[in-house]
Length: 116
Length: 110
Image 1 (cartoon, rainbow over the protein chains, first blue to last red):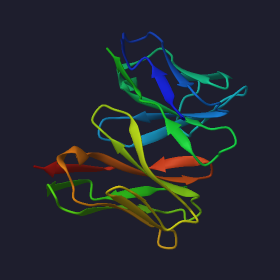
Image 2: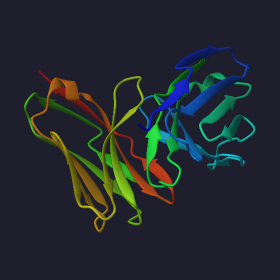
Image 3: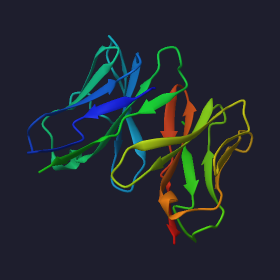
Image 4: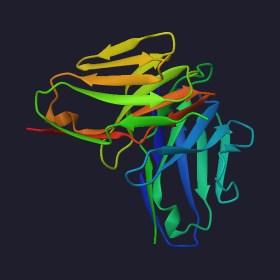
């Protein structure tokens, strides 16, 4: 149980284009999902907290207009990187929190984004 | 603001050796401490989760301890194997968020 999937697992896009990454909780409902970014040989940095049906809360220094987050259902959150640039190339990982269990997160397998 | 530090950054050991990875955190108000494994280019695999009311958790050859008063956690790996080679991350849960350390890159040599 508590499986989280991400799609796509990897994507290459050209500079200036937008890319959407999906995060799904497969066997549970998640009122809250988190988006992290991980640069090579660095740790995971929380980008934003996404709550179903409301606006995401972004961490300091994360551009909300560049990283659009939508959490339209209890099993799906999407992250759209708008007008991507090479410096946005990174490993993006989502996690989901089981409704009613606020202290546990389950992680997706990650999405490797390369912007050329 | 929670800060998590892991020492050492990298560790290389011969197969069969017992080893300890260290994690320290600044906010003692954490409600749990998790240890994860990450293989190159892959996502996270949860290894152990210690609730704030617990002192340790064990799973197979892994044992994790938590000392909130000193702001420390350790991950003990017994009888290490080459398959244990990976990056190990610890993360402290506080304020409904997880804060990650930079990880320890473990290499177990056959």
